[in-house]
Image 1 (tube, rainbow, N blue to C red):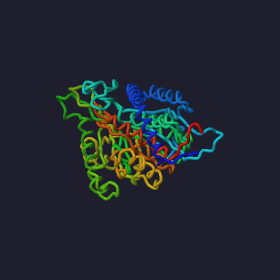
Image 2 (image 1 turned 30 degrees about the vertical axis):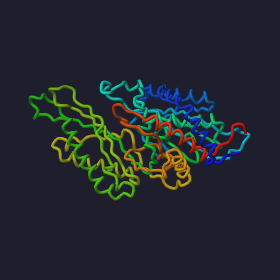
Image 3 (image 1 turned 60 degrees about the horizontal axis):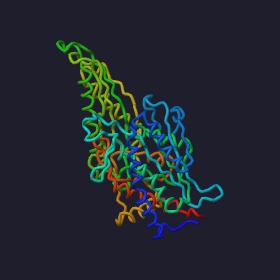
Image 4 (image 1 turned 120 degrees about the vertical axis):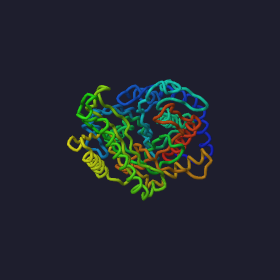
Length: 437
C-alpha cells in the first residue's frame, strides 16, 4: 500500500534518515570529487557510480553508444568528430515484478563530466583533493554537479533506511557530455528510457529553473600569411585577423540582447542573458614571425524559441560581413567548424503536478511559503526530456559557488537540504510503500 506524503511520521522519518546518513554521504561525495572526470576521461567516475548502484541492489545498465547510432535523435550535434562514442550508466529500481507499480515513474539524472581546472597554482587547494572549510566542500565538480548527483542517490538510500521504497519505477542516470553537447542524455533516451517526470539536481540554490538558454559552439579557423616581423607589411597576422572577427561577434551579441532578449517573456528582466565567449585560442608558431594560423573556440547563447539553424546562419553572416571588411580576410575568408552544442533553449511548461510535488517538498524542508524560480543564462540537459519527448523536466539543487572557476565549492548544509527535498519529492511524486509490505 502507498502512504500519504503529508503523513508527519513519514516526513519526520525521511528527514531523520537523511541526517543519519549524511556523514557517509559527505565522504562519498569527497571520493566522487577526487575522480578527475574531464571530457574523454569519465570512465573511472562511471565505474564508481555503477559500483555504488550494484552495491545497493539496483539493476545496472552500462553501455557505450557509437555516435553514428545517435544521429537521427532530436537534439543531436556531431562535435566536429571530437567524440566517437558515449558511455552511460543507468540504475533501475522498481517494485517487484509480482506487484503492480502504483506510483508514477521518475528519472533522476545528473552528469559527472567536469570542465578543465585551469592552472593548478591558482587554486587554494588541489582541485581533485576535496577539502571542507567553513561548511563548504571545495573541488572541481563538487558543485557542478556531483553534489546534486550524490544527493539524489542518497535520497533513495534515506527512504529505504527509513523503511520505505518508491511505489513507482526509478531510473538513476549517470551521463557525460553535458558540458559540451548533451549527447549523454540523448543516449539514454535513444536507449529507450522514459518516465513520467525527470529531475536534474544541478546547483540552482534551491530554485526551480523555469527557463534556460540554448547555445551554439563553433571554431573560427583563421589563416594568415607568415613573414618575419621585420617585414610585417609583407604578411598578415592570423591572430590579429581573428580578433577582428571576435569584435564583430561581440557586436552581434549586443544586438541580440538589446533587440531580442528585452522582448522575451522570460528574459526581458534579466540583464544581458545572451553571452558570447571566445573561450579558447591557439595560434602562431614563433614570436618573431607573423602567425600563419589562429583557431578560436567560441560559444554563443540563444533564447528559448530561437531556431538554431537561423541563429547559426546569423553567425555565419556576421563573420562573412566582418571578413569582407578586412583587407586580408576579404580574399582569405575564415573557416567555421561546429564543435559542440547546437542546443535549443527550454521553458518548463505544462508541469503543474510535478511542480506542485516539488513545491510541497521544498516548502516542507525550507519553511518558505513558495518555491522560487529562475531564468538561467546557462543550459542543462532538461531540454532533451521536456522539449523533445514531452517529459516534464525539473531542475533544482544545492548552493554552489565558482563553478567552472577556481576554488569551486558546494555548501554542505544545502546539500543535506537538497537530499531531504528530493526524498520528499519522490514520496510525493512516486508514492512510497513500506518495505515490510
